[in-house]
Length: 309
Ligand SMILES: NC(=O)C1=CN([C@@H]2O[C@H](COP(=O)(O)OP(=O)(O)OC[C@H]3O[C@@H](n4cnc5c(N)ncnc54)[C@H](O)[C@@H]3O)[C@@H](O)[C@H]2O)C=CC1
Ligand SMILES: O=C(O)[C@@H](O)C(=O)[C@H](O)[C@@H](O)CO
Image 1: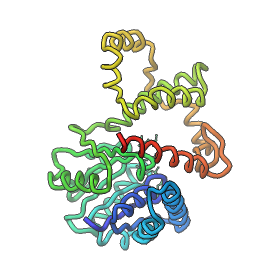
Image 2: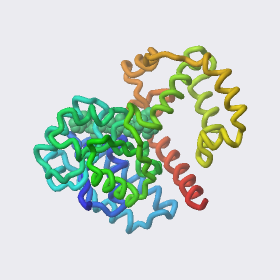
Image 3: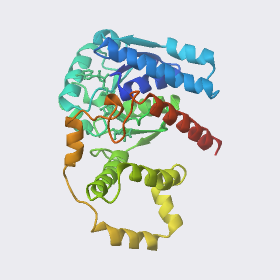
Image 4: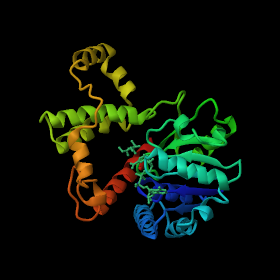
């Protein structure tokens, strides 16, 4: 599995291209616009430079990594020799299905087609597929070149060889794959994250806390703890009688909405999209360049610490 193709050069695609290239793979990354590819190239270079600054990579390793990445707007060129394709285009089912139609008309039956989807079950992704058995979900986390976990989601139709090969590739590129036993919308992490976000948005709508208050509170508590002690282990350490009381006392008071909060929809409608538009829960003046640099710097320190453990 030497030839990797990343479709989409956005938040996830560029980081995935860097990840595979750092692991020695030949990478083609494809976006429809040269400007997206140029932005991806800048972000990958910046990320690698931080790793060189922190002596995680040498200059030579950075240059070798950059040399393994081919940027193209030509979809056929990007996929024709691919062994493994990571689709990382927007979370839009029709766009994904249209892309898979094209892929399957070009690539060999042996090519593994994976999606970085945050939510869609494979059954939905493969509803038009000629060879559904070679589709799999590899859900990376932002930024994919740094966050250890990747969720692998399969169904009974998924070829065992595809699952095993995908698992092995994830280990080869330095990830910690978690294979779900059953597929479900949003998999493990995003279901937990959305349950948390539902409550966080509820607290904001009720005027209990601001977005910043919530970030400070969560980073310094569960964010701190969960880096080395997961939510279930934390309950063992707390005492499950207390867990039972906590869950029992709070559960009935939680938000049970099934709707995206109106303030979030209004933000998206008003182009308050986060670093992409310099306005989201926070304001930016550099499209998040400083925020990304600080994030990566901190994540690399955390990565070093967890690897020393
Ligand atoms: N943003 C995040 O933090 C995470 C996103 N994901 C998932 O990864 C996938 C990609 O998400 P992002 O990187 O955030 O998206 P993005 O919007 O940042 O990037 C999407 C890329 O796809 C290209 N693109 C847009 N429409 C296209 C089309 N019709 N055909 C081909 N290419 C097209 C864009 O030019 C861009 O390069 C989504 O499925 C998302 O749910 C997964 C984990 C985290
Ligand atoms: O944090 C992440 O990378 C994942 O939870 C995701 O898949 C989500 O898309 C996230 O980035 C947006 O909340």
